[in-house]
Length: 330
Image (cartoon, rainbow, N blue to C red; front, side, top):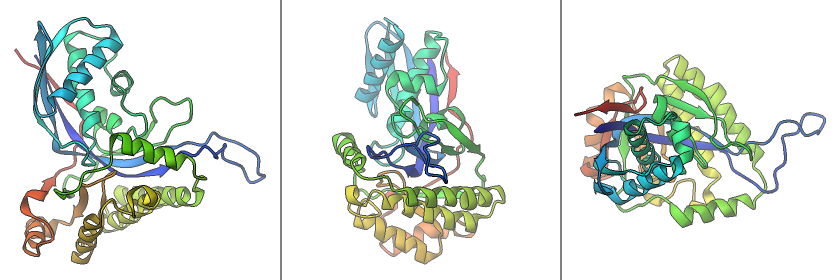
């Protein structure tokens, strides 16, 4: 039996949207130079809620536990891709909620594929290969790279010929920087057909080069230097600005910078409390808040007492510095 444990992915924002009107980047003389990349992004792997599952040989396909049907689908897709004829029993012992901005689909698909790959001794078991085999990483690849190595991640986006966006930066995240997660119960992140339709509409728009340039500046001159210097205040301000700037590209699709008025209200309350690094992960509804050490204990209770959130909407996560953990069990 193979056991796989992996973290969850926070997506702080994309760098660029696709556009059917976009050609290559131009140099100062107005001549086309390098191919234009779409998507790209910045994110962080965290230790919870994550995924934990086991896979074992079986006479017929079986799946049980949270997200069992989706795990079963990933298992069959992977086996078809690599030509494995056997059947397997999948037990999902815990899994982050789907469509909450935590990258659950990618972590689940890669975990199932990796476990079956280990059982059947497949030659290629890296996350990029597994992602192509189960159909993940078509837009963002942060969760794909995070499955392999954890940490703070930047991926560079895709050209028309790029299968999986390349990892540009993998940086260890300070262990003493805690992340408060707030997931409003009444909000579900955009997914499935609605998400595909939203991106299809975005493709028809002209590229927003100014926003992409601002986002790249915030990454290179804001997030990365502050992280290197372990300057939580500066990192938090840059993260808040980056998340809002990236969210502005999705106003037409989600009705505002954030996906729901309650998300916006919670972000505002967090900022008023003095927490700088606050934002919406992916399409939401999960909100992340980078907490100063002095607020670890008091902060969640303050939010609950002020009736800004309920206790069951909150959790504290730690940075996940490692990739998926694989164990063989008898």
